[in-house]
Structure formats: C-alpha cells, structure tokens
Amino acid sequence: MRRDISYWIYKILKILFVSIFSIAIIYPLLVTIMISLKPVEVFTMNPLGFTTQIRLENYIDAWVKGKISIMLLNTIIVTFMTIVIVILFASPAGFALSKLKIKGEKLIYNYFLLGLIIPIQAVMIPLMKLSNMTNMTNKLSTLIIIYSGWLLCFPILLYTGFYKSIPTEVIEAARIDGCNVFSLFRRIIFPMTKSANLMVAIFTGMVPWRDFFIPLIFTTENTKRTLAIGLFNFQGSYFNDWTIIFAMVVLMSLPLILLYLFSQKAFISGVMAGSIKG
Amino acid sequence: MQKLRKITAPYMLILPAFILYTSIMFIPALENIRISFTNWDGLSQTYDYISYHNYAQIMKDQDFWNAIFVTFKIVILVILIQQTFGILLAVILEKNTRKNVFLRSLFFIPCLLNTVVVGLIFSYALNVNFGILNNFFNNIGLQKLASIDWLGDARYASWAIVMTIVWQYSGYSSLLYLGALKDIPKELYESCELDGASPWQRFWKITFPLISPALTLNCLITLIGTIRLFDIPFVLTNGGPAKATQTIAMLLYRDTFHYRNAGRGAANATILMAIIIVFSVIQTWYLRKREVNM
Image (cartoon, rainbow over the protein chains, first blue to last red):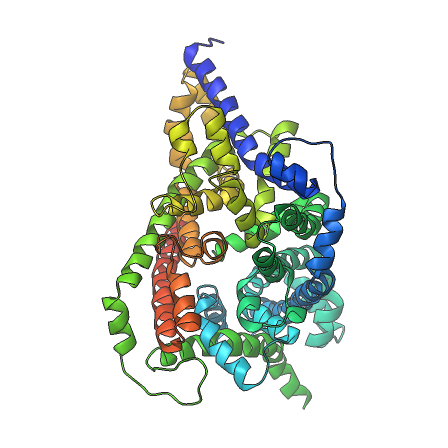
C-alpha cells in the first residue's frame, strides 16, 4: 500500500495528541499523590519534584484532623439509603408503567420525564423552607429524602424501558399460576433485573457520594456532613498545608476509583446512562 | 375486594415513587415560582407579594447580565473544546487494542472524582507561583504564559474553569462518540481505502458526517449540564475575581444566602429553569426528529 507523507504526518500528530493528553490527565493526579506523601519541609523546598522522603503520617493527620471517620460513615449511610430507596420506588413504578394496564400511562410517564429537566437549584429554596418549618435541617434523613426524590425520575424511565424487553409470556405464566401483582414482581420480575439494578445503583450512588451542593445547604453541623463538604471546609482551615489537604483528597477519591477498576463496564454504563439527564 | 385489589394494584406500585417525586421536586418547583413573586427573606414567617418586582430588579441588574454572559461564555468554550477533544480521542482510540482500552479507561477516571477534589487539584495546578501549568510554561521558556495568574486575573479566570471542566469530562465525551463510531459500517472505510483517500479526507467525508447527529446531541447534553454550573467556580474561584466567574447558579446562591433575599433567589432559579427547559425541549424535539429519520 502506498504510504505518502500525509500518512506519516497523521501518524505523528496522532501520537503527539494522545501523549500530550495522557500527560495532561495523569500528571495532575500524580502530583497530587506525590504531594500527599511529602513531609512539609520537602514540599516547601521542592513542591513538584520526586522525593524519596515519604511521610505516611500525612494520611493519619488528614483522617484525624479532617474527622473523616464520622463523615465517611455519613456518606456511606446517605449513599446506601438513597440507592435502596430509589431502587425500591423506581423499579415497581417502571414495571407498572411497562407491563400493566393503567389509565393515563403516557401522562404519568411524561410527568416523570419532566423531573429530568427541573434543576436542583429550582427546588432548593422551597425545600429549605420546608426543612426549617419541620425542623429537618442537620438530619441525614433529610439528605436521603432529597437525593431520592431528585434522582428518582431517571431510574423510573430506565426500568420502564428495561421491563419492556422482558417477554410478556413470563408474566402470563405466573399469572395463571395464581400470582398476584406484588408477588409476581417480588419473585419473578425483580430477580430478572440484576444488571439494571446495578446500573441504577451506580448512577444514583455517584451523586450523594460526590455532591456538595445539598449538604452545603441542608447541614450546618460537622457531625452531619458528608465527605465532599467536609473536604471543602477542611481546605478552608488548613488552606496552606497542601500535603494534608491532598492526603484527604486521595483518601476520598480512592474508594470510588478502586470500585471502578474492579467493575469498569458497570461503572461506565451507569455513569453514561446519566448523560441523558444532562 | 379481590377485584378491587386487582384494579388498584398497578397504581399502588407507582404511588410511592409518585408521592416522593411530587413532594420533593414537582410541588417545590411550583412553590419556587410562587416565592419568586414575594419579598421573602428566607427566614421570617411573613412576607408580601410584590408581583414581578424581583424579575424587574433582575433585568436591571448588571450582575445578572454579567452572569448570563459568563455562563454562556464558559458553556460555549467547554462545548467547543470538549467536543473536539472527545471526537479526536474517540477516533484515535477507536480500535480495541490493549493500549487503547487502557487509555480509554484511564481518561474516564477524572469524571469519577468529586468536584471539590477536582477544584482543589486545579487550584493547586493553576497557582501562579508554584502550579503545574505555570511551572511547565516556565520550563519550556514561554515566560509570557508562565506569568499568567489563571485564578487571580479576571481576564483568564473563566479559562481556568473551562480547563478544569474539559479535564474532567473529555474522556467521558469521547466514550459517547465511541458509541457513534461503532455504528459506522466498516464497508465505507474499506471502499474509502481502495480509493486511496488520506486519513484527513476519510475523517471529513465519512466519519464526521456520520457522527454529526451524536455531535448535536452531545452539545445539547453539555449545554444543559453546564448552564447550571455551580460547584467548580464555587470551589476554584468563588465567583471572582471581579465576578469574572459568577455563573447564574452562583448568583442565585448569593442572593439567597448572602443577601438574604430568597424571593429574588427564587426568581433567578425560575429564570435558570426556564432556560434549561427551552434547551431540553430543543433536545427532545431533536431526538424525536432523528428517530423519525432513522
């Protein structure tokens, strides 16, 4: 095959672009990890270079001073409960919308679709008013309820599409055997949707794990806050000590990255699914 | 009784989701519009209706038009740069070789990070004195670029925000395009190869036209997602310097919490919602049209 000059130019540009882009992605992450391991003296002398002097105590300092234990626990509780509520509420709704005869099905579907375009900022002030009126600020349950309501719509649409792909014969056979709707759903349909559940869990869980807007508004006590807001406040009080700040950054990011490395496919499909939501 | 249960059962399955969504999203969104016509301060029990006064104030406010300008400037820059990077990466890393699969999953990592984390990494990386970027420019002898204060100079602060977002989401964008590339029939490339077309011609004659529906869709997704931008400027620049990175969402946060003017914050939120709804309607319309064409 003829390989003229444009082929080689293309080849070189391609390698150049990928190399520069890779460095641009990796280098900031590497520097972050490196700084998190440096003793302060080494960091001030030589912030960006390599060093053999490693101080792992930065991580202990970050854990203790950043009060990570309590915030990690809060984050895990909020994330886990949000996932559970969203799956338990969205899955049956999606099932009913796709497989059962109901009046106004289209209308209900579009009503949930509307939820995708309401920005969280547009409900912030009324929810704040409500939580003040009912004394619900500084409660983990408030965060869980808000996240669940906010993130519910997309999984409903996802389950509706997913259940449509399940053959109707399965349902009719179960019906003939005398299953009522609830046990049909519990025994047969729900176990069939493992992959959709995983996708919804990742799509849903990513938000409370990383979000910082809602805890910023609905919590004021440190003992009720999640990691994202904890980190933000932490850098406010230790704003010059980058070694400890970055140790906390690494500690916070590690769980999600490890989970991702173990189940890349599920993660990518879960995160990408949310892109329709914008 | 048995019969009644059969009829109501499907509704009972929807009811919990319906109640939760209605009470957390739908009613509050309407309530927000109502509050936008009041002078509520966010705390007190009483307030008055002041008709469209908040909206009139906003329209007269220099800060609002600045926020619109800033937001759309960031949105447009992000769309241009991120989509270009996304397409380039998707085209270059299309084949499923081990190296490409590895790079693709590596480039996805930034979008798993928390925005506060990304904000902190970049507030270090873009620092004028010891940051990575200025240090890099210094090393390769570009003194002009090395002296730019990305976070402290009003002329460049929005670029700092754009760089951060592009860094975080380019890998993600490229995966969206990869899906579109996979749908292009291989025969087209083969016949192109026989004609002796250069990679450049091949891209503009075949790849680009065939992924342009995905391009339109991704632009809309990025647009709708970035218009409500709040976290990154909040962490990185806190809207400054000189309001150069104050987005619409930051403005409504300021009105509500710093100026204690929840009515006006609500009016701002309503405007933001209206803008998002307009673009979402365009997106839905576009998706429908494409389904018809396919």
